[in-house]
Amino acid sequence: MSASVNRIALKSILYKEVHRFMRIWVQTLVPPAITISLYFVIFGELIGARIGQMGGFDYMSFIVPGLIMMSVITNSYSNVASSFFSAKWQRNVEEMLVAPVPNWVIVAGYVGGGMTRGILVGLIVTLISLLFVDIQIHNIWVIIATVCLTSAVFALGGLINAIFAGSFDDISIIPTFVLTPLTYLGGVFYSISLLPEFWQGVSQLNPIVYMINAFRYGFLGISDVSLTVAFGVIGIFIVSLFTIAMTLITKGIGLRT
Amino acid sequence: MQNALEIAGLRKVYKGGFEALKGIDLTVKQGDFFALLGPNGAGKSTTIGIITSLVNKTGGKVSVFGYDIDEKLEIAKSFIGLVPQEFNFNQFESLITILVNQAGYYGVERKLAHQRAEKYLKQLDLWDKRDNSARMLSGGMKRRLMIARALMHEPKVLILDEPTAGVDIELRRSMWEFLRKLNEQGITIILTTHYLEEAEMLCRNIAIIDNGIIVKNTDMKSLLATLDVETFILDLALGGPKASLSGFCTRQIDDHTLEVDVKKLQSINEVFTQLTEQGVSVQSMRNKSNRLEELFVHLTGGNASGSSVSDSKTSSSAQGGN
Image (cartoon, rainbow over all chains, first blue to last red; front, side, top):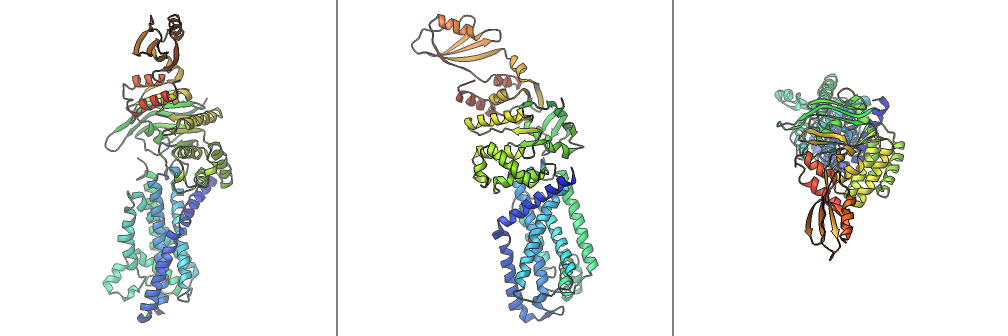
């Protein structure tokens, strides 16, 4: 089909996705704002004040980038996982499958929707953080690149999860048992340089470490990992997950009989 | 004239080994009003699923307006509008949103999509509900919404899988009229239905599928012409003389109900002539069953039990016969 047809189809999927999470903003935008506010109050103000400095910065300034990234990861993932699975469950995914929409447009549309929610929640959390700390920016382009690429990685992950999911329970398993532990162990609340050498090595197997550190570099100019390696890891994840998602949709796994 | 749909040697074997389609061949001409009939599980929905790419085929070829779905799937899809058997729209979206988004998937700009949504929602008496959530609609309204949705990209062929299932008689008739008008405008229509009367009234050509095989593929007139005997039920006036018809096979059901078998070469006028001579007054007359139904049961070897036949009988008698 022509590029203009694909462009309109992509816009339609994006519009549908953004309209969906905006319509239920109380469920999609408010909870992360409340959760992160609690993190700021408890870990930043109450406990953080007793911790002192981390990586040369006061604890509150240190954890802000990690907390923003944590909400971006969670929301970009859960948006696509729940939206695509709902579309499968209600069978309205068939609206797209019978239309001349290329599979890459379907993937791009859903991932774009997940990225939009992740970034929007990230902005909300950033605004809330301004109530607690003066945010400094070391390199805005690193911040923008990291947040966009990371939200794309987890939106793709949410899509793959939804393709395989057979019930609503299946879309909460990965966030509960994989994403949350990886995020908490990904250096949101601490610098991995504080860990024993063995656990520092183990941490380097956690992709979220690279994303949080690249993002933190954008704000504070410090990182536990090389920025080049961090973007390399994120790039590999995007290409791999996109290829997997495309293969699954092309084969019709969970979508076609 | 170009063929709207060409199917050759189409096979589908589901996981577990069930062979739903055993190599069917089918051609639907452009502008046709075509019925695809068959008992439950015969392979109708599988066929439609393959044409619309919701089901992966095991073998065979499908072309839509000359475009092979294996080579030019997206172009082939752009010609098709699908009204599926089950409701498959987002129940939480408004009608207008569902329609405009659907048009967008086919590359229709939002402004034009809004104009078309207004046109079809008005034609299908849903305009007042345009901002309502789809889950608030009645069953009949949901069926009409799916028809409107299928028309948003102005397809050349409209495929309807049981479009009037669960729809009341009045609404069903208005949907028939709507579909007739679409067909007159040049849209090819392929219909599967459990209401055999519906197929007989609307369709010019017909294929009957049973156990994954096309058992009959012909035009409706030729098919109905093969019917040797039609059975009529006559409601006679109470208290009149006993009726006796020579040359006809009859069954006296009760004092005022007579069943008469009329063979292809016999005239129904002869029945009335004889009854008039005997002073028997006929108050009303109806077919014992829909003509197509008799052929359908014959061609599918009696597999058409259950809802298809009983639905048709209900429909036929509820409307006072044809």
